[in-house]
Image 1 (cartoon, helix red, strand yellow):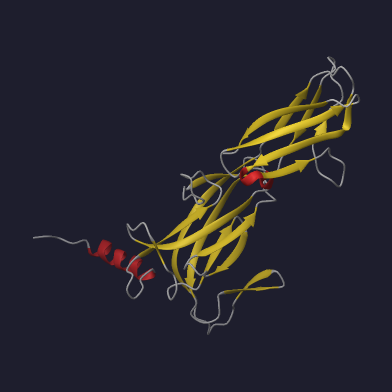
Image 2: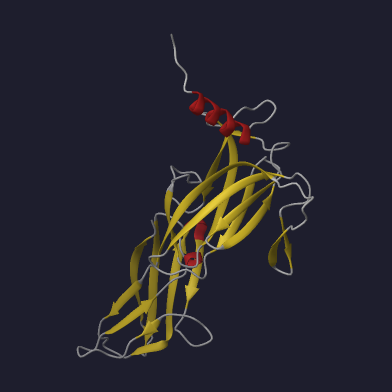
Length: 256
Protein backbone atom coordinates (compact mmCIF):
# COMPACT_ATOMS: atom_id res chain seq x y z
CA UNK A 1 0.00 0.00 0.00
CA UNK A 2 1.36 3.41 -0.97
CA UNK A 3 1.56 5.90 1.88
CA UNK A 4 1.25 9.63 1.39
CA UNK A 5 2.70 12.36 3.53
CA UNK A 6 -0.40 14.54 3.97
CA UNK A 7 1.58 17.45 5.44
CA UNK A 8 3.94 17.57 2.43
CA UNK A 9 1.06 17.13 -0.02
CA UNK A 10 -1.00 19.97 1.46
CA UNK A 11 2.13 22.15 1.70
CA UNK A 12 2.74 21.69 -2.02
CA UNK A 13 -0.89 22.44 -2.85
CA UNK A 14 -0.79 25.59 -0.74
CA UNK A 15 2.47 26.73 -2.35
CA UNK A 16 1.00 26.28 -5.81
CA UNK A 17 -2.14 28.12 -4.81
CA UNK A 18 -0.05 31.23 -4.18
CA UNK A 19 0.98 31.36 -7.82
CA UNK A 20 -1.91 29.52 -9.48
CA UNK A 21 -3.66 31.02 -12.48
CA UNK A 22 -6.64 29.77 -14.44
CA UNK A 23 -4.75 27.89 -17.11
CA UNK A 24 -1.08 28.28 -16.33
CA UNK A 25 -0.54 26.14 -13.23
CA UNK A 26 2.34 26.83 -10.86
CA UNK A 27 4.45 29.81 -11.85
CA UNK A 28 7.88 30.95 -10.78
CA UNK A 29 9.75 34.20 -11.28
CA UNK A 30 12.95 34.83 -13.22
CA UNK A 31 15.05 37.94 -12.55
CA UNK A 32 17.73 39.03 -15.01
CA UNK A 33 20.14 41.97 -15.13
CA UNK A 34 22.13 43.74 -17.83
CA UNK A 35 25.33 43.52 -15.78
CA UNK A 36 26.18 39.83 -15.46
CA UNK A 37 28.14 37.68 -17.89
CA UNK A 38 26.05 36.36 -20.78
CA UNK A 39 26.51 34.13 -23.82
CA UNK A 40 26.32 37.03 -26.21
CA UNK A 41 22.86 38.22 -25.17
CA UNK A 42 21.85 41.16 -23.03
CA UNK A 43 20.47 39.49 -19.90
CA UNK A 44 22.08 37.39 -17.18
CA UNK A 45 20.09 35.27 -14.71
CA UNK A 46 23.06 34.29 -12.53
CA UNK A 47 22.19 34.34 -8.83
CA UNK A 48 25.38 36.26 -8.01
CA UNK A 49 26.63 39.07 -10.22
CA UNK A 50 29.09 41.94 -10.10
CA UNK A 51 28.31 45.60 -10.64
CA UNK A 52 30.57 48.62 -10.69
CA UNK A 53 30.23 51.62 -8.41
CA UNK A 54 27.95 54.13 -10.16
CA UNK A 55 26.68 51.66 -12.75
CA UNK A 56 23.14 51.94 -14.09
CA UNK A 57 21.73 48.41 -14.19
CA UNK A 58 18.63 47.29 -16.07
CA UNK A 59 16.42 44.63 -14.48
CA UNK A 60 13.93 42.31 -16.17
CA UNK A 61 11.43 40.11 -14.32
CA UNK A 62 9.22 37.53 -16.05
CA UNK A 63 6.93 34.71 -15.04
CA UNK A 64 7.64 31.12 -16.06
CA UNK A 65 5.94 27.77 -15.79
CA UNK A 66 7.77 25.06 -13.91
CA UNK A 67 10.64 23.57 -15.99
CA UNK A 68 9.77 25.78 -18.99
CA UNK A 69 12.36 27.93 -20.76
CA UNK A 70 9.96 30.39 -22.32
CA UNK A 71 8.36 33.10 -20.20
CA UNK A 72 4.63 33.49 -19.63
CA UNK A 73 2.78 36.67 -20.59
CA UNK A 74 1.79 38.13 -17.23
CA UNK A 75 -1.26 39.93 -18.65
CA UNK A 76 -4.28 38.98 -16.57
CA UNK A 77 -2.03 37.32 -13.97
CA UNK A 78 0.07 40.11 -12.46
CA UNK A 79 -0.44 43.85 -12.63
CA UNK A 80 2.84 45.24 -11.32
CA UNK A 81 6.23 44.26 -9.96
CA UNK A 82 8.09 45.54 -6.91
CA UNK A 83 11.89 45.65 -7.14
CA UNK A 84 13.40 45.84 -3.64
CA UNK A 85 16.94 47.11 -4.23
CA UNK A 86 18.82 47.31 -0.97
CA UNK A 87 16.60 49.64 1.04
CA UNK A 88 14.88 51.20 -1.98
CA UNK A 89 11.54 50.26 -3.53
CA UNK A 90 10.92 50.59 -7.27
CA UNK A 91 7.62 49.61 -8.92
CA UNK A 92 7.30 48.66 -12.58
CA UNK A 93 4.17 48.33 -14.69
CA UNK A 94 3.48 45.45 -17.07
CA UNK A 95 5.14 46.12 -20.43
CA UNK A 96 4.00 45.20 -23.95
CA UNK A 97 6.02 41.96 -23.86
CA UNK A 98 4.18 40.71 -20.78
CA UNK A 99 7.05 41.26 -18.33
CA UNK A 100 8.41 43.96 -16.05
CA UNK A 101 11.50 46.12 -16.55
CA UNK A 102 13.19 48.90 -14.63
CA UNK A 103 16.65 50.41 -14.18
CA UNK A 104 18.55 51.66 -11.17
CA UNK A 105 21.72 53.72 -10.77
CA UNK A 106 23.97 52.41 -7.99
CA UNK A 107 25.41 55.78 -7.03
CA UNK A 108 25.55 55.39 -3.25
CA UNK A 109 27.37 52.05 -3.01
CA UNK A 110 30.97 51.27 -2.13
CA UNK A 111 33.62 48.78 -3.20
CA UNK A 112 33.05 45.40 -1.53
CA UNK A 113 29.42 46.06 -0.65
CA UNK A 114 26.71 43.49 -1.39
CA UNK A 115 23.21 44.49 -2.53
CA UNK A 116 20.28 42.08 -2.49
CA UNK A 117 17.67 42.67 -5.20
CA UNK A 118 14.28 40.97 -4.89
CA UNK A 119 11.60 41.25 -7.58
CA UNK A 120 8.01 40.29 -6.73
CA UNK A 121 5.00 40.37 -9.06
CA UNK A 122 1.61 41.21 -7.58
CA UNK A 123 -2.01 41.09 -8.65
CA UNK A 124 -3.99 44.15 -7.52
CA UNK A 125 -7.06 43.29 -5.45
CA UNK A 126 -8.31 46.76 -4.46
CA UNK A 127 -6.11 49.82 -4.07
CA UNK A 128 -2.43 48.97 -4.23
CA UNK A 129 -0.79 48.14 -0.93
CA UNK A 130 1.70 51.01 -1.33
CA UNK A 131 1.40 54.38 -3.03
CA UNK A 132 4.17 56.85 -3.78
CA UNK A 133 3.30 60.30 -2.46
CA UNK A 134 5.77 63.19 -2.57
CA UNK A 135 8.59 60.75 -3.33
CA UNK A 136 7.82 58.46 -0.39
CA UNK A 137 6.17 55.03 -0.38
CA UNK A 138 3.21 54.95 1.99
CA UNK A 139 1.31 51.78 2.88
CA UNK A 140 -2.45 51.73 2.55
CA UNK A 141 -3.91 51.68 6.05
CA UNK A 142 -7.60 51.10 5.27
CA UNK A 143 -8.87 47.92 7.00
CA UNK A 144 -11.27 47.44 4.09
CA UNK A 145 -8.52 47.32 1.46
CA UNK A 146 -7.89 43.76 0.34
CA UNK A 147 -4.12 43.06 0.20
CA UNK A 148 -2.60 42.55 -3.24
CA UNK A 149 -1.88 38.93 -4.12
CA UNK A 150 1.75 37.83 -4.43
CA UNK A 151 2.24 35.88 -7.66
CA UNK A 152 5.95 34.99 -7.77
CA UNK A 153 9.37 36.40 -6.90
CA UNK A 154 13.08 35.96 -7.58
CA UNK A 155 16.30 37.50 -6.31
CA UNK A 156 19.91 38.24 -7.23
CA UNK A 157 22.89 39.18 -5.06
CA UNK A 158 25.05 41.96 -6.48
CA UNK A 159 28.70 42.30 -5.45
CA UNK A 160 29.98 45.86 -5.87
CA UNK A 161 33.50 46.55 -7.12
CA UNK A 162 35.51 49.64 -8.02
CA UNK A 163 37.88 49.66 -10.97
CA UNK A 164 41.11 51.67 -10.77
CA UNK A 165 42.93 53.24 -13.72
CA UNK A 166 46.63 54.03 -13.24
CA UNK A 167 49.25 55.20 -15.70
CA UNK A 168 52.92 55.90 -15.05
CA UNK A 169 54.26 58.75 -17.13
CA UNK A 170 58.02 58.45 -17.65
CA UNK A 171 60.27 61.49 -17.35
CA UNK A 172 59.90 63.40 -20.62
CA UNK A 173 62.66 65.02 -22.66
CA UNK A 174 60.57 68.18 -22.62
CA UNK A 175 58.20 69.03 -19.77
CA UNK A 176 54.63 67.79 -19.92
CA UNK A 177 51.90 70.30 -20.73
CA UNK A 178 49.55 69.06 -18.01
CA UNK A 179 46.63 71.09 -19.30
CA UNK A 180 46.46 68.89 -22.43
CA UNK A 181 46.00 65.62 -20.51
CA UNK A 182 42.96 63.56 -21.50
CA UNK A 183 41.67 60.08 -20.63
CA UNK A 184 39.38 58.25 -23.04
CA UNK A 185 37.30 55.13 -22.31
CA UNK A 186 36.47 53.13 -25.45
CA UNK A 187 33.23 51.24 -24.88
CA UNK A 188 31.11 48.91 -26.96
CA UNK A 189 29.17 50.43 -29.84
CA UNK A 190 31.95 52.96 -30.55
CA UNK A 191 30.96 54.91 -27.44
CA UNK A 192 33.76 57.17 -26.25
CA UNK A 193 33.86 58.72 -22.78
CA UNK A 194 36.35 61.54 -22.17
CA UNK A 195 37.69 62.49 -18.75
CA UNK A 196 39.96 65.40 -17.86
CA UNK A 197 42.04 66.44 -14.87
CA UNK A 198 40.19 66.87 -11.59
CA UNK A 199 39.16 70.48 -11.11
CA UNK A 200 36.19 70.91 -8.75
CA UNK A 201 33.32 70.81 -9.36
CA UNK A 202 34.49 68.71 -12.33
CA UNK A 203 35.49 65.21 -11.27
CA UNK A 204 38.48 63.75 -13.05
CA UNK A 205 41.85 62.07 -12.77
CA UNK A 206 44.68 63.15 -10.50
CA UNK A 207 48.26 63.77 -11.70
CA UNK A 208 50.91 63.40 -9.04
CA UNK A 209 53.90 65.64 -8.49
CA UNK A 210 57.17 64.45 -9.99
CA UNK A 211 58.73 61.42 -8.38
CA UNK A 212 62.45 61.25 -7.60
CA UNK A 213 63.12 59.84 -11.09
CA UNK A 214 61.09 62.56 -12.82
CA UNK A 215 58.10 60.33 -13.55
CA UNK A 216 54.48 61.02 -12.60
CA UNK A 217 51.44 58.92 -11.73
CA UNK A 218 47.98 59.39 -13.16
CA UNK A 219 45.13 57.80 -11.16
CA UNK A 220 41.36 57.73 -11.62
CA UNK A 221 38.36 55.89 -10.15
CA UNK A 222 35.87 55.51 -13.02
CA UNK A 223 32.13 55.23 -12.57
CA UNK A 224 30.15 52.27 -13.86
CA UNK A 225 28.52 54.34 -16.62
CA UNK A 226 31.96 55.03 -18.12
CA UNK A 227 32.71 51.31 -18.61
CA UNK A 228 31.35 48.30 -20.43
CA UNK A 229 29.12 46.35 -18.01
CA UNK A 230 31.00 43.11 -18.74
CA UNK A 231 34.17 41.95 -20.46
CA UNK A 232 36.87 44.61 -20.77
CA UNK A 233 37.13 48.34 -21.41
CA UNK A 234 40.06 49.92 -23.25
CA UNK A 235 41.43 53.12 -21.72
CA UNK A 236 43.76 55.60 -23.41
CA UNK A 237 45.62 58.45 -21.75
CA UNK A 238 47.11 61.15 -23.95
CA UNK A 239 49.20 64.22 -23.16
CA UNK A 240 51.37 66.72 -25.04
CA UNK A 241 54.73 68.04 -24.00
CA UNK A 242 55.66 71.73 -24.29
CA UNK A 243 57.35 71.00 -27.64
CA UNK A 244 54.01 69.86 -29.11
CA UNK A 245 54.71 66.12 -29.12
CA UNK A 246 51.69 63.91 -28.30
CA UNK A 247 52.23 60.80 -26.19
CA UNK A 248 49.66 58.08 -25.54
CA UNK A 249 49.44 55.29 -22.97
CA UNK A 250 46.90 52.47 -23.03
CA UNK A 251 45.43 49.98 -20.56
CA UNK A 252 42.72 47.34 -20.69
CA UNK A 253 40.47 47.39 -17.64
CA UNK A 254 38.72 44.17 -16.59
CA UNK A 255 34.95 44.69 -16.17
CA UNK A 256 33.64 41.29 -15.07
